[in-house]
Length: 554
Image 1 (spheres, one colour):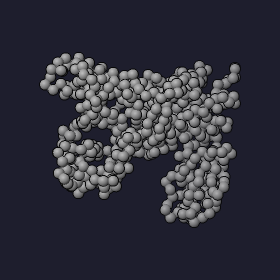
Image 2: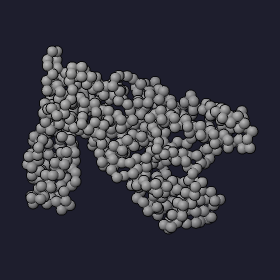
Image 3: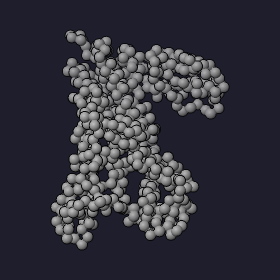
Image 4: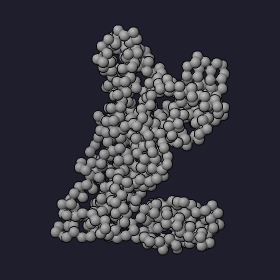
């Protein structure tokens, strides 16, 4: 029995009490109630504070309301007992058969277990990474690659349609500096004062010359190095991301916004809404009235578009493509940009933080031998995606970057994440999955198999089994919460907690899955085989949500 099933049972009880006239709820019966695992043993399998929450609305003492709910809830199939604690908490004990039945349900659901429909009907544009194609992907972008892709997976598991989008910044001054840097190397000149350094500039410049041997003799050599160099650099970024198991559905070119007339269309729409005006020869967006600290220039007096003009056009383009939710992941240095973006959203007549949501990610530091890594051999000034993958591998890198809340700074100890022992969090979780695979292979060697028609869930009565089943039951709620709060790190922490619970069950000799010695296979062994299969499913699904592999052997 899952928390969601218990929540439904409590709602049904409240509905029955209202229909009978036993209680009155002026605001109606809630569609869901919170059911959680209690923190202390002896407080039942689950607990709910629904009586405390509804007592005032019902005009009743919380314990009195709790007594009425408890009496009816006890009659529900699968409920062994309901006790009232403190001022009105309900501690619920579940029958072993109802609890153990979950193992069969998880096995039957397979890869779909953990999915929910909390975002069903939403069409989400998820924009992340979007690093400038002027150098290898740096560590901040790598964090967004891991977190963004994991968030996309969590949202999809919650019923959303998700389009992963990369905003390709191929318009503006940084591209010019990149092109000048390539050209300077090809001409044997020093790197421009505002240019880019690093061995990769030499590599890209050589590739440009290989593709276009006469590039230096062209009418506009810088344009040749710009066009080919950006294409080569972006191809490298895409390959690095693909090798990191991150692929995008759309690569949107910023330059297209300015060449297609999208900027002008966006300004005209905002003008029709009464939110654009002209002053001092420039075109302004009236963002202050929507909460920004001042109005913003969209088209400068010289006729060129301000950087903000592209944001207007890009947001409108997303909305016109049918996305009702637009999520953008930005680095900590963009924090001051949020206010004007939300004001822009409101200026279009949309709802800030709903139609448009901006997530800010903090810094990542790599530690090696206890000291910060600050430079890449290839990039020269920043640590890149290839540096971290080379040091600890894709799985460990993805897990390490997605394991923490993105709004906190993190230090990643490369020595720790390279270890093949339980001190390494990703190894700890992957090892449990590999162990369940080995256990199931050993069971198959004895002719043991899972038959859900004859599986007897009531045999899973040991305290450790109940603890493990309650943990496995939490995955759907963890996924839904991770999607709602945009926090995929919750999945990683859940997996680690559940791994510890599985190890405690495995280490208890009273919970052996295989028969001892020459003992025949008993129904309890088959029941535990189903439990192991359910655990394997949960770990595989959870790791999959983080884009991390679930190895069968380690």
